Image 1: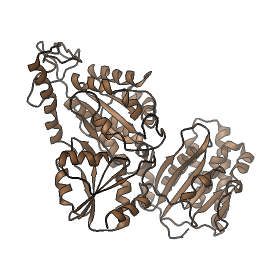
Image 2 (image 1 turned 90 degrees about the vertical axis):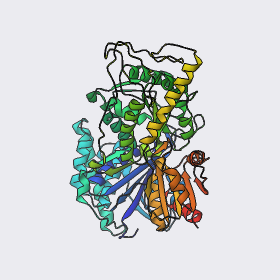
Image 3 (image 1 turned 135 degrees about the horizontal axis):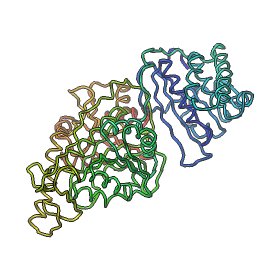
Image 4 (image 1 turned 90 degrees about the horizontal axis):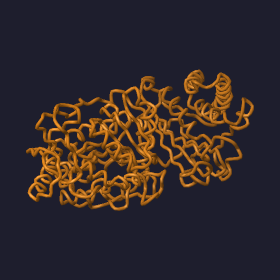
Length: 569
């Protein structure tokens, strides 16, 4: 490993149940406090014990926010780790850990032996092996031992003093072994440190989605646990009470969305969080929201399908599911944030749009975005003004009053002197059932007129790169950072990137951007280029080249760089 290398990829790999996530949690925060930029993302199997799980932690002197195939420092915690990640290991990879887990490493490999389990047993038990490993890695990166110990005390607050002291002893022993390896000259790491980073936040996508929902006024969340959406449910259950949030784990997804609709009818700002298989059960209730014009935010955390598919992996396969969800015709709003800070913003925006236009509003994320984390400045999490978009009802109040904008004044029961009637049937302006064909047409037209107002404030796509581009790379959602870094690697001044943070309604600027390019390349984590098809439908412009990945894994910087280089010849 070059001493001048300013971007190092650490990968931890072991069996489910070995505590890989604990080592990740310790390291990302210790390294960030030490003044490094940090990015981490996990990959894990759908099993409670056994198998092989891994976590990548990029440590850098510059902001890094995308997955790389490259492994510079590999820490195997099981004998299956090296076979599991063999395709990513290279002659430059340095191995750190117990000798028994190094089977399969090339004879020429640099192996730094540290007996994690043996040291852990000496200080109090095998459970402390993760702390030993984290401390050894921290020493290699010249993190001060006192800083590691201080963070460990904070991390284990609430544990017994014996557990804390055993962890401190594990830090001291692990740190000493890492320091000895560093002093031996077998591994030199000289990353630039930036003290100001100590004040930055370390967030993952689930945290950002949850915080954005709180900032948007969310006060009711219902869900049935389903990976990868469960992180939002857990966060809100743990932290929602001080903000007045009612969190309900329903018996199934059908109950969850109907609970949210009931809460919204009563005046709550309600959200459900689910994944594709769970949302498939919510289709009828989505239509109920459409015809009853009841605001609801639906967080759709994508994973590979059909059916159970790959429940712990990532994919962008549900754009069309969300767009065409529910029977009948009514407006849909689809926000597709590409970064952690944009996820925070999109969650807020979703609550405002849902309340303003009284229609289902989706935030589409995926496993990769939700479970990746990186450091960011606090001022990147900006707050939006919040308007409840409610009126006090009068005695002659009509819930579904015909208006030019399609948006009827919304009141809730008990707020004003009028009667608030909602119905799942075709209804008259005052909310009562009708089969009058003229009123039916009026009501459908009224709801669809909302799209004009929604389109007028649609989030425009973001253009990154030269305005005088010849080739345009198009993406949406979580491909944002990997496309940006891949284009930086290419270093071409004739290629730009157009990212869609909202895919529907299709931004009106999209057509001009697409038609300006001589070549258009769409990059998506699905098999059928769902955004590409949507853009062709609404702009008439077809993609010239499609780069698609649907094996359940995210794009890597190296892999995408090579594919873009070939596509942009």
